[in-house]
Structure formats: C-alpha cells, structure tokens
Image (spheres, rainbow over the protein chains, first blue to last red):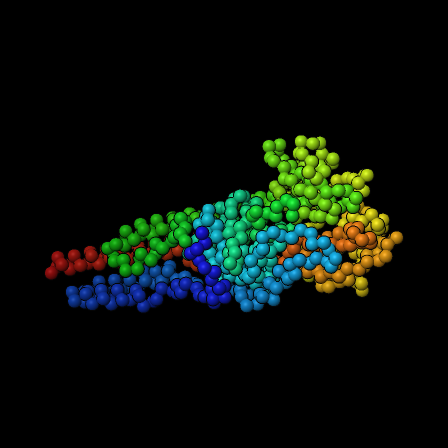
Length: 273
Length: 304
C-alpha cells in the first residue's frame, strides 16, 4: 500500500536538502527585554539598589542562557569530513552510469542462459521504507568527498543512496546511508541498528517497489570499516544500510563505529533460472 | 515519523520563565538533562558478519542428458530446492544461503525424488563465499565438483575473468585477448581457472585449442565486475562461449566508513560548554536575584 507517496522526483527533493534548521544562537536581544521592563517597575518604587542587582543578575543569567541555548549549527558540518566537498548531487550521474551499464554482458554466440525474471524498474531510488521500525524516508543521491569517502546526507531527515555504486535492484550492493542522530536528537536512521535478520526493507525505484531481506547486521570501528563486505561485488541485487553506532567521540564529534545492515533481494532468484 | 527516543527540548521552556518559576525550571532542566543522557536508539547491533554465502549449480558435461538437481540445507527437516531439468551449459543464478553444509544430489530429469540420486556431493557454505557446484566430465565419468568462486573486488578500475572449460573438443585451451593480456593457458577440460584481472572495455577474446580451429568472441567488460567465460561444445561443432556475470560491484568504491551522526543521542554528545551545568547556573542566579529582590522589597515596604 504505497499509495500515499507518488514517486517524487528526486531532483526537486535534493534541492531542498541543504536547508538546515535555522536554529541560530539565542538572540542576545532577548534577555534585556525583561530587565528593562522590570527596571521600570523597580524605578517606580525608587530603589536603585534592587534595580542594579536585578539587572546585573538578569544580564548574567541571560548571558549564560545565551551560551546554553546557542547551537553552533553553522559549524555543524565542520566536524564531518564531508563538508569540504558535499558532492551530494549533480556530480553523480557519470558515476552512476557505470553501475547499471550493460545489464547483460553476454558474449555473442551465447545461448541466452539465465536472465532475471522480474524486470527491475529504471531510474534512481526515491524512497526507503522499513515498516517494522517505522522508517519511511526520501532518498537523495550521495557522492564522495575530496578524500574519497562517502559524503553523508546534509539533511538529517533524509537518507542517501551512493550513486557511484549499483542502484537497488540492479546486480551488486546498493549502499544507503543515513544519520543516526543530529545534534539534537534522533535522525532518519535512529532505529536502523534495531534491524535483525529476516526484517524486510522496501525501496521505491521509479514506479516499482523492491524488497530486500536482512541477512546480517554488524558494528565496525570506522578505521576498520568492512569495505569489501559492504561495497564488494555480489552475484545478485543486495542492499546495505549504513549508519553510526558505538561510542561518541566528543573531541572529534563523531561516532567511533558504523553499523551496517546487510540485505539481499527478496525473493532471491529462484531455482531453475 | 515519530521516534520514542526522548527529545531534549527542556531548555526552550526556560525562555519566558519568570523569576518565581526558576526553581521549577531548574527541576525541569535537571530532568531534561537526565533524559538527554539516556541513549535513545544509539544501542548498536551486536557485531555479526554477513552470515550468507552463495551457491549456484551448473551442468557442464556435454554428453550428459538434463538432470534434476536437489539442494538440501542444514537440518533434515527442510525441503530441498529443486532445479528441474538442468541441461548442458546451464548455470543457475547464485542463491544466497545461510552458512552451513548443504547436500547436492543429481537425478535424471523427471526421476522421482525417492529414487537414489546418480551423484551426490556436499558444499560447506561459509560467510561471504561463493561456490559453483558443477556436473563435469563425460557422462561415463561424470562427477560433481565444487568450484570456489572468488567474487572479491578486482583492483580498482579493473574487471576479473576466469574460464570454465566444458568442451570435450578442446582438451587443452588457451584464452587471450587480442592485443591484450593472456587470460589462461593450457586449461584442461572439466576444470576452471583462477580469475585474472583485465582492464574493462571491449575485447576480442581468442580461444585457441589443439585439434580445433581458433574461435573469437567479442566481450564488453565493466569495471568492478567478475565474470566467468564458459566454454562449451557448439551444437554444430567447434566451440561456443557464454560470458556470465558472476558478481558486480561499484566502479568507484568509497574509502572507509561514513560520518552519520551528530551525537544527539549519545550521552554528553554535545560539544561546547557543559549544557546542563550552564543552564542550572543561570537558573540559580535568577533564583538568587529573585530572592534578593523580594527581601529588599519587603524591607523597603516595612520601612515605608
């Protein structure tokens, strides 16, 4: 029952992506409003001492509040290594083309052989759903940063498909990454670490919906990321979900681990193919 | 979408809170701070490898009629998967299977499952590994062989090809790309070679064999992809080939992990000044000032 969401063009969504919730620093003008009002009242009862104390106290409290509520959102991306080159969009089609190119590289003279039964819908994936954990998110296309690492989605509410790799439903491991949390609380993939073998993952692609079945999950230190298992060639259509996990390094402002969910196309290619 | 994990919005309540409410606010904030310290969904899954391997079945015996192939999983209770009437030259798709030992049985096509199989073998599926279980050789000495398929990624920007030799017409086979690398030499009938790396793109592969005229085949290879070139007896004599895509990956593989967290679910994940402490201090100052104000006002009132 995917009726609620007609296929939204990924491009229009991507454009909205860089908008960060504009939670700027608590305006310094806010606290003074109280003191001035109050000081007026106090002046009426002509008590300069009270006024002075109160103003000073409120100013101090206001300053502290300002510090407390100040969310350094501007540098949000700074600790993330992706920020220098947020290659989230635009630059990927060339890469993406390499993935699905030549779906059947069958040599001439070959006798047809086994070909996948159901046709895989064309186009980029647009949405991911995992009903069991209440996940339903729009997909953007991800690229690499200057260091060659996968650049996560800029928006904490969106998940992203790595456009330089296979698309979901094509042969190979399609990789979808999403944030575990923002600075304020849960993000799009907050519950992905709860996935277990057997859970179903749905990906909307074009007019079709593809289903994957979780086969395994794992948590890995980022400096020992299982690149081969995640990005290595696979015989059929597979899916990887990647988010963060483990301890949070406050100095570097990053999680130490990645959580990876491995999934295969469901149903897999049947016997007698 | 809603998450059960606590949202830390306690500080926002503080705005507009009057002096008298400072103590209440402090309590609220303290509660909020505690809530923030509870990791919401941050509990990660226990580590577990990709506990899936891959098995495919192949009929590579030229003079053996079609067969039914049975694949039985670990534990006797499971019903075997049956590949019906697999004929010469057919490779099935890979089946992703949980790791464990599997029994493979071959019967003549159409034979009842109760009939004793012609051939049986076992394949031990390990995590992430791939196997081709192939009926190989001539009918007279037909055997089931388990080939290890190395589906690991080729070097960056490269492709991988190996040869599965299933033609009795070429006892020894050489495969080389025209103006390119040699893929395999002296391949014996009923064997498979190791994978060799080759640059992606269009190639004309030349198959040279003792006793047969050389054959050429044009192939297009994609980067990051793993192929098997199956060499078969052609129906009208000579050799024919089928290039199978064993596995496919991305052409550009990202390095390392992904930064997918802001720390909002981690205890003390916030950078900057210690949050709860600062808020508490602010509240305390306000409370003290309020108290002082009240005291002074009362004194003044008494004097007046």
